[in-house]
Structure formats: structure tokens, C-alpha cells
Image 1 (spheres, helix red, strand yellow):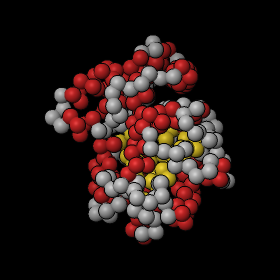
Image 2 (cartoon, helix red, strand yellow):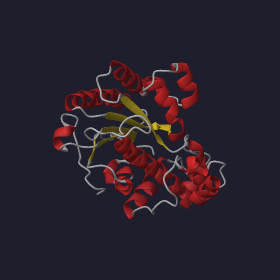
Image 3 (cartoon, rainbow, N blue to C red):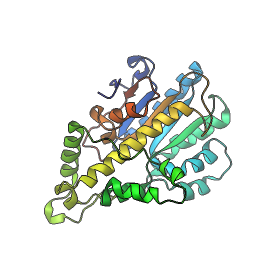
Image 4 (cartoon, rainbow, N blue to C red):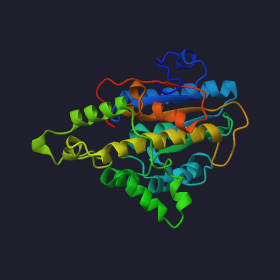
Length: 286
């Protein structure tokens, strides 16, 4: 499902998928081995793209779309210090050990000039404050907020067009089963998702706002990937060469079984095919 989703192995994803435009790497966020493998996949993709004269883009769930300029100033322009990037880009708490090696590789590869247009890091996720708002008040609450923003066009550019399409039946079932299995038992109802506040009680009650928030995550990342394919290099620079390759890193829930991002990507266009590279050895957190 999802318009060209091809399962892959580490020993030759590009051979199995033909010439993919997107590689989706699903992870368990605290899997140390997966993080090491991601860096190797990134380096492998860089070698291929350098040989083919293609752009390469690293897209990360772990950064939010409103900090894209900060990442460009650090990775592509080499203009700001790492400590300033960290202050303004709001990386996850495990950034230093798990994601910094990939970002630093992109920065070094850009400075070396071996890849056309540099190796951009895309802040692919929706701003956390917006996902949190949707989890509490639904997408209508976010739509009202953006409509009243002083710069509504700029604010709306940070998220996909609202309202989002309804989820597929398979996606809804997967969401309910996964979230319910990972939440604490009823006698520990205070438990919640550390990222956007998915509470145990809200999940058990089947509140539609929770599903809408999850959809906002997936559609935001799909839109970011599609935009990276069209733009290729830094913001506003069209890619006139071969189509770029986008390596997207996200929680496995967002791309496993052809659901989530794979379902949403065709809605935003601009790609020839994509390949999910990476498995999950235990249930993946959203």
C-alpha cells in the first residue's frame, strides 16, 4: 500500500527498490544498535549519491518544522555554533548520543563539498505545541489558532493542510492496539506519553483527538519528505539535477506495515517510490 512501498534489507536497499526516492528507516527510539546502523546507512547513501551525482537529504522526526532555518544555518551555512543550534533547535534528550553523529556527518559532508548542494537536515515533524493542542482539542482547535495568527500563511506552512484526511481502517486499528498495549494498567492511569501527553485514560476512552494528533505527526513528516524531494537543497533552491534521495528517520510506528507515512506520501506528491529500511524487534513507540 501507499504507492510503491518496497521492503528492504540492509545489504542492498537500493538494489531491491530500483532507484528509490525515499528510504524510510523506522526505529525504536532507545535502540542503540539501530542508531549506529542509521549512521552507516546514511554514509552508504552518501557514497551512492556522490557516485550518481544526486542530492541527499536527511529527514528527521526528532526536529520540528519551525526550527528548519536554525538547522540550515548550522549544517548548510556553517555559520552558527553548535551550542547555539542546540539552544534554538530543541533536540530530543537523547540527541547527543543517538542523532548528533548523523547531523555532524551531514555538516562535515557539506563542508567537504563532495555532495551536490550539501547534505541538508530536514526538520520533518510538526511543532510539538501543535500536536499537543490537537491531542487535547482536536484539529479544529489548531485550525482556529492558525486562522487567528498574525502571520497565518507562515504558521500554516509549518503543518499540512487542515483538515487531514480520515485514517484508514487498518491505521485506526493499529493505533488503538499499539497505544493500548503500551499504556499502564488502569490502576496507574496517570501514565502518559512523554512527547505529547497521551494519557492512559484518554487512550482507553478512544478519544478521537488522540488519533488526530497521531495523524498530524505522520502527515507532517510526509509533507516534509515530499517538499525535500521537490526542493533538494536549501529552502527555496530548486533541484535541477537528478532527483534527490531522502533518508527519513522516524519511530517505526510511523512507517511500519505500509501505514502512516507510506499512506500519506502520495497525497503530497513529488516522488517516484520509497523503501522502508529497518525492522522493529519489539513494539514501537509512536
